[in-house]
Image (cartoon, rainbow, N blue to C red):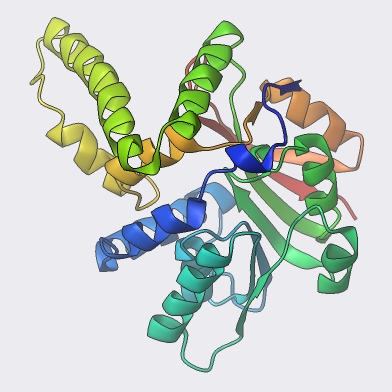
Length: 276
């Protein structure tokens, strides 16, 4: 696995602030898409009777999705604003159900051990932001019960492309806060223009609206908030699929589902089952 960022507090992205903004766009359609995403990747229509651990719960959307599928949910995030977002979703939709939210780090071995074991451990696009990705994956995997599932998403290693994205991310963090949205707009604009040219070359409508709508149907997310997260998100580490699969296989995990981005940028998604 490739470490392409320093574990530096000055370059830690305020994920929770971005998720607070995202909550303003949250609706039933996005929640339904999050449920669909879990159903598809886990191969289960229901999580009734399951314990579900959401590590790096962010907005709380997927904790909510698991809760709606019948799971008993524990949500954990290092970022206080993310914890606040998830608590707000629990207040809106959780009632008095079995769903707890707490602040903490996956790198806190004592805290993780105290949580116990779970039927599903979920951490989407989080462990590569800890500054210690390998260790974070190991600690998270230890929370999976025998026969349970481990669903993680990790940034794809593009080699030189990943190093260029690191430079873009560092520029974001060097800018004054007021200028950061302009940087996101500029970088996203360049890529959206390239995407438009590619669509035009394929004789398709070059406008981005269909893609933006598809983003909503991709895990219920938002195109703008994904751009902010991607351009600002640090610490930043990446891995090739084999760098994730092989170590976990050595710990008794069998790959059940895999969705990759090929040679592109973004997250590869992995679902493992822990052999008893």
